[in-house]
Amino acid sequence: MGHLLLLFYSLLAPVIAVLYALFFLLSPRRSLMKALAGELKERLALAPPFFTERPVWLHAASMGEVKAVARLAPELAALFKAPLLMTSSTAAGRAEAVRLGAEARLAPLDFYPLAASFMAAARPRLLALVETEIWPATLYAAAVAGVPVYMVNARISGSTAALYRALAPLSRLAFAGVKKVLAQSELDAALFRGLPGLEGKVEVTGNLKHDLLGISTAGTDKVKEFFAAAGWRDAPVFTAGSTHPQEEPVLVEAWLEARKAVPGLKLVLAPRHPERLAETEALLEARGVKYSLWSEGAAAADCLVVDTLGLLQALYSESAVCFVGGTLDATGGHNLLEPALFGKPALFGPNYRNARHAGDTLIKLKGGFLTETAPQLAAKLSELLTDPAALQAARDNSSKTLAALKGATARTLAEITTA
Image 1: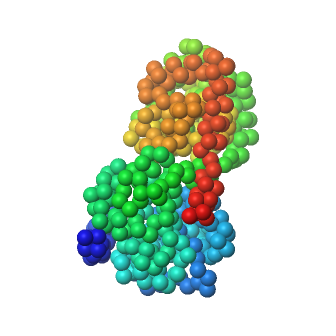
Image 2: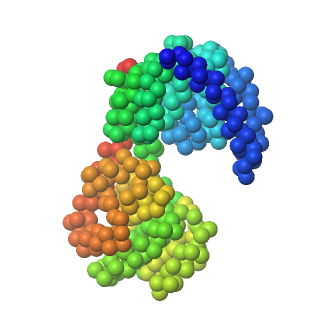
Image 3: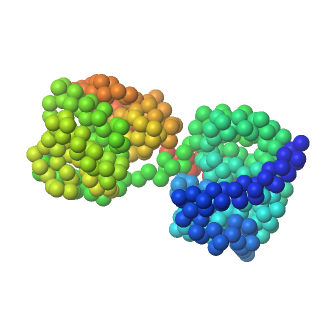
């Protein structure tokens, strides 16, 4: 049954690819297909790479996933003293792989003859699939060729897991060559453990992206100078970063309420998209808030609107408490751990699905706090800023959270080398 399902899938894959291409050609996003003719050789495995030594092969869907293995990929190649081959499903991902020093290709279509042909030409010593990349034909081709497969920084949704459980014979066939699934979180691990063919192969190693977090000093001196010129040097500052339109009314309301308990509290709004500055200004004017714009220089105001990019870390570093945007609307959250780089507690809303493990850990270790409404935000701000011991504890816990979440790269390398 498994082989029949794989045959059906392999016959269906080219049809889906053609339909997908037609969809884009007939849509307003047709410009995305302009390079299709030049990409066909790679998509059809007609231009496979050649290596004198067997490479380490990593496949990542797009630029974001390639960036996630920016540390792991070169360290893995160095560990095995092997060339680095990286494939991606997008041209942007391929370009990012080139910047990492890899021999980069677009991934061949997940059609067994093409996957097997690419595998035979490249002769990889191992294949690491990044995050959600589960390609049955490629996985089966690796198993047939005797290439060990590792799923790294692995995550999976409940619906995808349910699909692979329903297709149990295909799953067992595809996962036969998987040595280990190295999951981002316990939740992901539990879903993977429930899949046919992965019993006893799943470990939690953490999120590789957490190891890439680093402090940027860009703009730090400018922010300090700005705060000093505005008379903010000794005032508590609440910075709301990467905010979206639905969030800003809540944040402004919470700040105004918190000022009743903390009269000197200043607000920094750093919208995710500065081009929608007019909306933010209209909101503040409607609430009678006197504000200044970063681009116009320091002024005597209690609110600063940042109308440029690249300053968020510097602003977090000079703040008492931070809010991470994209969590009170449908966005799914931005980088919840950036305030922790500076030992600052983070407030965020309930929709942090893009950083679920980081958010859950911040809440568990009390280095971050879930606030769903303006009154809740105001109450937490007031609590932290009127109780120095509570604020210091939250700062310490923020730093502890970041330390606890780092180390995924080392754990992943250790799991691969001991498999």
